[in-house]
Picture 1: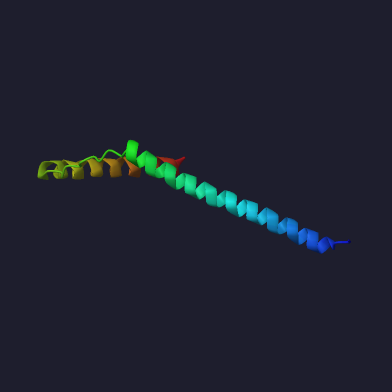
Picture 2 (picture 1 turned 180 degrees about the vertical axis):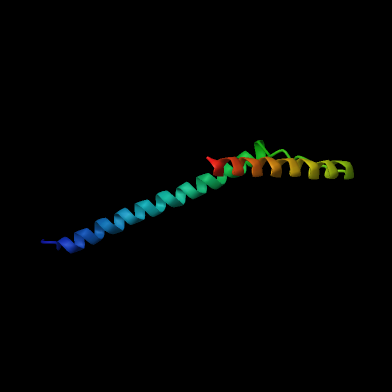
Length: 81
């Protein structure tokens, strides 16, 4: 009973691809279950961000201008060297 090498190769290929497919399917299922468990027992804490007041927004513009001045000075100094 002689079996062709091509037939044997196709059998091994099918066996290998099926094994990899089943492993990846199992991996996906396990990761989904793990994600549900983590969300159930360790939920993310929701932080409440407060809206900035008018005074904070005005001082924020001052800080931005200082940052822009510092960046401009650093670029100018870098180009000199």
